[in-house]
Structure formats: structure tokens, C-alpha cells
Length: 579
Image (tube, rainbow, N blue to C red; front, side, top):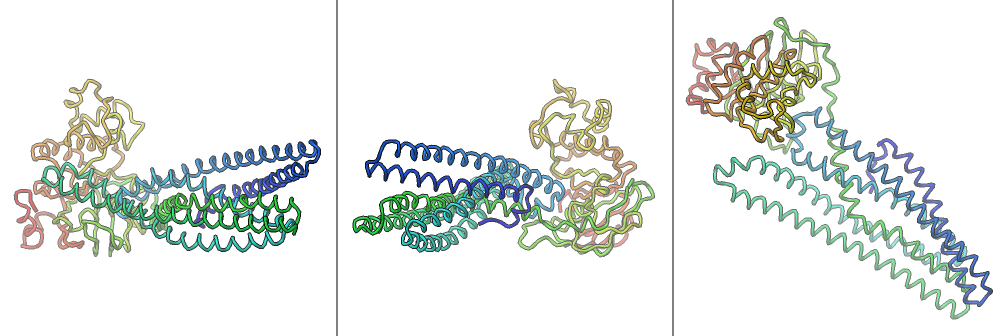
């Protein structure tokens, strides 16, 4: 029920020690509450003096108030821990996603990551609030009460001792069924979240192709499957709660009959029977509380396990050999030999895995990467950008051997321009200053002028302070790309540019308008440019031809044009900007 990795979280062990002390004290308070109530009732039944009733009732009231005060303190401590720890886990998750980059999003799914960082953290916080308090109650309260009941009536103690294993057995049987159902439900939930986010992203394309209604039916099917799994899980959860309530109620009823018969036959005094009957529901209460929230704790445990699997994902290769301080210049070089990268089993990825013998880049080259869709261009770009860790590779940067380019030193030297630029909710100036947050207004203006944003910004009432929506909502695709280019101009200390088909979604007129600032940006940079468009190949010094994750040809455009190889065959297929 408790994930063992939970104990590695800061403050967990200290929390358990504090809760153990408070809960043990609460167990004795519950015991005194039942004892003094039974004593007052027995004295009243025996028609003793009023003062013999007032004292135990006063002590009962003190115990009652103290019990709820201790419970309030318990809950407050656990709530503070749950809030603080869940936020810390959220922070670690977001840091992990930032460090891992696209590889983690591709493997786990963007929807899954978003769900984990939002709904998942809420489930974990609720899990922390429930699991610690209820487990401490189950651990300390029943044993303390049972020992006292044994001192009052051995037969009653034996009866309660026999009933508890039966209750626990039913809890285990039904709990295993609930666990399996909850696992399936949470798995379906992650599928639904990924599916829904993908649908939102692709909605304009689906609508344009006339497939939106067909895809709506697909979403309905996935959603209905999640509904069905949820109902199955709730059915098991409700059944387990009913079974436990029935067993505990039956146990108390059997005990009451046994005690009633004993009193009729004068087998024992009234006080032991009455105090046992008062404490019996308290004895079963921690079990019943645990059962009633079992499903909620399962959801939280599944969410926590999912996040732990992300946080503990092996990513040590990139840290084994740290790259020394790097400033890429005309004499720098990168050598990659025997590069192998495979996507994890079951990962739905449209790009090919890699098996590349050798790549050598140096200075301020312009490297074009071409190939048909799914040939491995994006995977190669992401690997060279340090967003993916290769399974195997011999990498040298300026003759220093490293295991992976997934290092801050390398990534601090590059600017990445994808085919779908991502802009954050904020001002245009803030988006331009992405790589250099402390840039001055003059620097931002210079970079935007270089990117051709000057005329566009003049049309905006607030200019650089114009607020744009998340993902660049409110401005055209061409202007979004200009902002990306302005980012690169502003980050002048970064001398490696990686382009992943940056103009793939633009019309030819917009692309042509962007070509001049992009060519100016190429100066004094190592450029790695993946493209489908023929006219960009003419701007490259060197071309890498990809097919099925392998390099089929590489060389200068003139060298590759001199013979009828993979380059020429691909060029013939690309006529008209089509693959």
C-alpha cells in the first residue's frame, strides 16, 4: 500500500516518528474516553451519588476534547507535509522534463506529463494526507484497545482477535482486485490524456482534411473505455467497503450478543461488558476508515509511481564525462563514430532509429540533412542537439571524448529552431529574449530588426510589449518564425544553429521572405539544417543524405551531383518541394 520509495523523500521518516508518538497518545485518549464513559454509565445504573458520575463524565469530556485536538494536530502536520512535498515533487518533475527534453516527452507522451504534473500531483497530495494518518491509526489504536479489552474480558478479546484476521483477509482479496482495476484505470487515463492533447494539437489539420467527425468518434470510444474502467473500479471499491462494514458490524453484533448473555447469566460484571462494547467500534474504526479511502489512496499511489518512474529514469550517460568549457569557433570540430540509437519498445515514433558509422563537422560549416519522411532526420538532429542520448557512440568535441552531447556546456553553444516554433505567453520582447533574459531594449531591437520584425512591430499599438498567447496565439506562423530567428540573432554568443525543417509549414512566399535574414544568421555559425526544400540545399557546404536511420551518402552538393547516387535520386523525388 505504501511505495517504499516514499521513505526517501525528505522529512518522511521524521513525519512518521512524530505521527507515531501523537497516534499512540491518541490511542490512550480513546481508551480513557471509553473507560470513563462506561464508568459514568455504570455508576448511574447503580444509582450512586451524583459526584461519582460528574468526575468520570468530566474526565470523559477532557478525553473527548483531547482526542479531537490530537486528531487536528495530526491532520495539520500531515497537510503541511503533503503540500510541501507534493510541490517539491512537482518541481523535480518539471526540472526532470526540462533536463530530459523531447526524448522524455516522446517516450511518456506530452499528455501524460501534463496530467502527472497537474492532476497527478493533486492525487499524490491527497494520498499523503490519507495514507500516513490511517496507517498510524491502524498500527497503534487497535492493539492498545485490544490489550485493555483482554484485561477486562478475555473471551471478548479472543472474539475480536479472531474477527480481525477475517476482515484483513477480505481486505487483501478485494484490495488486490481493486489494485488491478485501479492500475488499468490509471493506464487508460494516461492514454486518454495523450490522445486528447494530440487531438487538440491536430484539430486544425483534421478539420482541413475533413476528418474531425471521424476523430470525434475515436475520442468518444477512448473516453467511453475510460468510463467503463472507472465504473468497474468503483464497483470493486464499493463492494470492498460494503464487505468490510458488514464484517465489522457483524463482529460487534456477535460481541454484543455474547456480552448480553453473559450479563443475563451474571457471568461477569456490568463495567467490563459495557467498556468492551463501547471500545469495540473504536477498535474497528481505523480499519473501516482505511477501507473507505482505499480507492483514493490507490489513485495517489499510481500517480506517485508514475512520477517516480520519470524521476528515476536512467540518464547517467551524459554525466560520465563532462564536456569542458566550449566556445565553438572556426577551428572547432565534432566527430561522431558508431552512433546507435533505438527508441524504446512500444514507443510510437514516426522517425527512424539511427545506425550511423561516422559524422565529422568542423568550423562554420553549413550542413544540410535531407531524406524522405521517417528517414531519421529529426532523430539525428535531436541527438546532435543533445536532446537524445545514444545507446552507443564515440563522440569527440575538440578531441575530448564524451559519451553524449546531452550536456549543458554543449547546449549552451546552440540555438534550436524547430519547424513549429514554441512561444510562451508573455510579451514579444520576452519571447525574443528567451536565450538571453537580461538583454537590453537596444539588443532586442537590433535582433528583431535583423529578423525582419521591424515593420510588423510598427503595426502593433504596444510594439515589443504586445502580449501574445501560449504557443504564439494571435500572430501568424511567419511572424512566429521571425521571433525564433530574432532569438538566434540575440544569442550571438551561441555559434551552433540547429534547424529542424523550420519552414516546412510556411507557404513559399513567406519562406522566401525569411530566407534573407536566415542566410545572414548563418554567418560565423555551424549550421545543421534538416529540410525538405530544394533551394536550401544550394546554400549548404555539405549534405548528409539519410535513409532508414543510416547515412547513404555525404559530401558537398557538387560532389554528390556528379554521380547518380542516393542524393540525385532523392532530388528527383523532391522536385516541386515534394518528397
